[in-house]
Length: 124
Image (cartoon, rainbow, N blue to C red; front, side):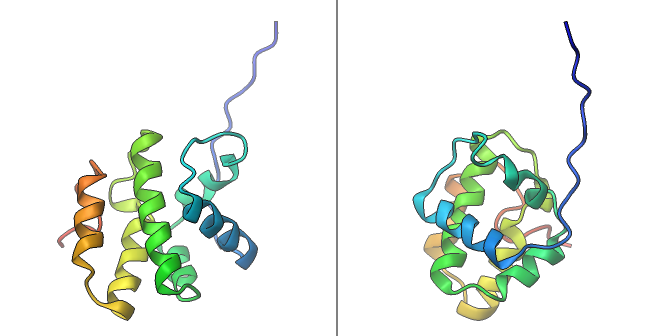
């Protein structure tokens, strides 16, 4: 019998264009069943909000909406407790800055999330 040792996941410090493309492709498909096919995303989920703010600058409205919706669903379906560290917050902040408030998107996020910080982040 062998015992594996637990290794913590190191948060990503950058998101490459190819990783971002892969994520947006999955987001458009709304794949939320975290299999080995999606294991690679966990370091990005735990990355600092700055990497998401930077990545958001390279995304159009449709990609931002798809990622916001996808990460909202992933957090709930995978039982991740991301709180104010959710990538939805910096993605939504960029969306709001470039596209304005989308009330339907806000309503959708609130209906599909148990994270009290989504989509706007902490109040203070």
